[in-house]
Length: 254
Image (cartoon, rainbow, N blue to C red; front, top):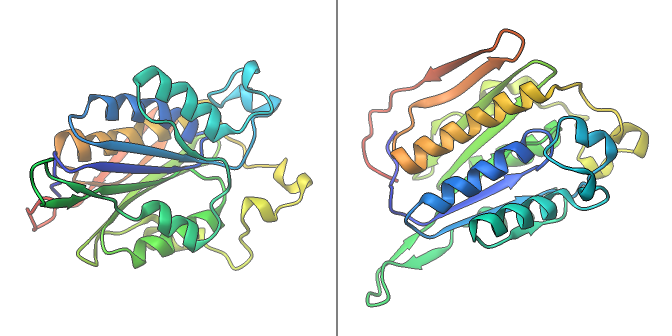
């Protein structure tokens, strides 16, 4: 599927921990290199804890600080981009719809013609209730790219869903993996302190492989203008990544 290489871009990254914290710096570098209006918004309500230093992209100096704020201020300063972040968990449809609503830009200062932003929603969350919310917003959107990343200790998958003209061209994670959603799934803020302290075991290698797949998809969409990969599965134990492509008959650019 082809994508415009000139439209303004807005990326909303939900989660800046195990995988999101490794995705973010590369997104800043990529957006810095693009010759068009860009915006990156990081969202996370969690704070940096000692246990996060083992596999997440933080240091001792970050302890006790909000993850989204630390990441946004660190890398936006390096690349000269605006530090946009939401230091809260995104847990309502209203919040996410507002974040993913495309802004409108004038084509030039001397023209009344406008163009809307190409919006990419990236889910780097560790709970399926947040995935369900992203899934719901994706299916309601007229146009949206939704990239979801999920992994366990060694293995995982990254899925790129594409909506255009109110139709789904690439299925999102929720349609490819419906077992992700269970009736008792809860948001991070709904978990007790004891529950929140226990998470699925992950390795830094699995987080890095997931981040690499996400960044590669975003790079192909924005820099190359063409992405045929709908999903990628990987294993850090076997050092293997497999991409699944989908050929689209439509050639018009978004």
